[in-house]
Length: 188
Ligand code: AMP
Image 1 (cartoon, helix red, strand yellow):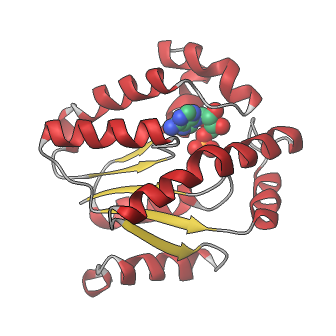
Image 2 (image 1 turned 180 degrees about the vertical axis):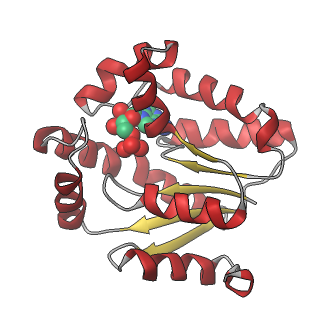
């Protein structure tokens, strides 16, 4: 199966993405994780992304689109994948659809972890990552509403959207996702 998981910073995307990938045995492609790792090792993508990630800005679309294109052409993603933190803009979402058409693949679900703004701030502050300073968090949240919320509508229109209450506990959120995607029967 193929999923994207959407949500603001601190919405629980990483946790839920990890659980779902483990359950379905599909690769997790987390752009935030890949970029942070790339910055630590100073890889090409890391160097390109560093100044943006450190300020809480979005890495330019063309860099991200090319990166995902290469990633989805690799051999381990034939049976499915989960994209976490991508797409983040309407342009990325449209380009992802073009790429999937070209690969003759279909997205099963866009899972939106809907969380109140106050919870996003609180959870991000408690996480203490390199881009989790209050001013940077606020910028990332603003960008989420400005650039990523329109994608929620994009997937809703295409009848691919599952809206999940992300304010629940991680276990409850996981359960809600499994019910909504019809995967509960095979859960252990
Ligand atoms: P995340 O861990 O998903 O919150 O991502 C951390 C940071 O990586 C973001 O604040 C952006 O700077 C960058 N980033 C991750 N994914 C994307 C994307 N799809 N488009 C642009 N920038 C991204």
